[in-house]
Length: 185
Image 1 (cartoon, rainbow, N blue to C red):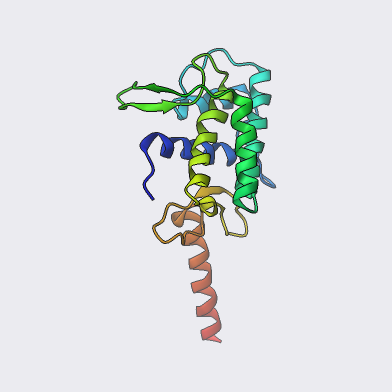
Image 2: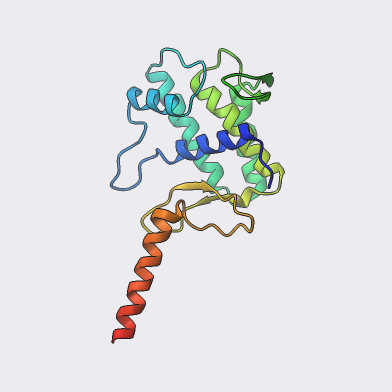
């Protein structure tokens, strides 16, 4: 599956945003404005000025909508969710080249809030996945103690874990040890 650079970046951002949601026993990765500023900086989100509690609430709302898209049972449901999200952001597609990147499309207005920026750019990245008939690539980790979101970009759509180094490796080692214990009697 050929994914343009800017779409891949937006997919990485949406996955990271969804994964900031608190799971049982863990804290929320966007618990306050400091965390929101850090998220925006980590992902080089352009045009972020002064942020307030209203911005944080709006981003948390966008995050929950993205989580719904990852949980959508079919492409029709995902498409409806994406359409609603992108329309509410007031998309304004425009070509741009900045920060050393060649021409690409921004889907948000130049003065958009950080929530609208995320909803428009990341929503359009998810729209491209749905349009390509690849909605089933939007997944949650199959490790029992993890439910992180990820986009399966493997050639054969076989990825099961958010990270093969952490969740995948941990489960494979546990299965290996269980087989050894069973063989030892």
